[in-house]
Image (cartoon, rainbow, N blue to C red; front, side):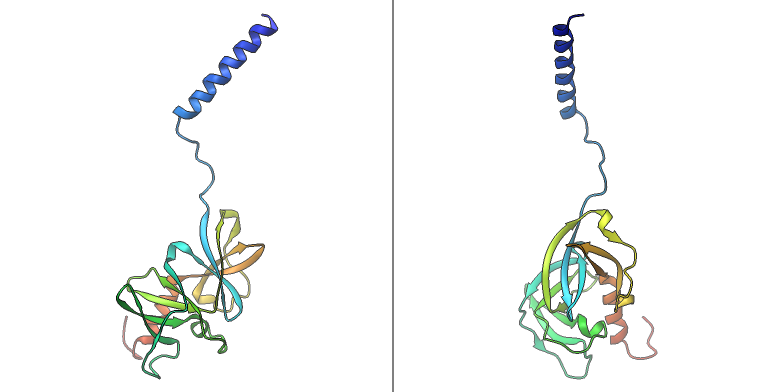
Length: 178
């Protein structure tokens, strides 16, 4: 077979492979990237899984709630006509009082709740290799699950369900069952 015939056969095979690539289902690559929100809670870096967040807001108008009900409860804010309690994550995490939170996420939970924090830093898409099981030294250990590397820095992942559960436990009178 001549070099020209081999080149023609090779070109025909490449065309068939190219055409097949559009006819076949794509091969399953790795896991899809995960969307996270990088935030600061009392100057400490944290992140939220975007799947656990309904919305992100800045400079909410919060109507103060009755003093003494719960220190973490900042008050009520209205989201699309619905009053929602707003809780200070710094207080829930046991951090010393700091600047007033300017940002809040509306959490994906059975009942609407907003979680307030000081600063939103970034939205990032991260691959599974950037998710870790348990970052060492997380101050709010029971309220975080694992961590994520964003911009080269490890951030504990706020576990929204645990935060909402902690809020519910604080709101129940002593001795009352859930």
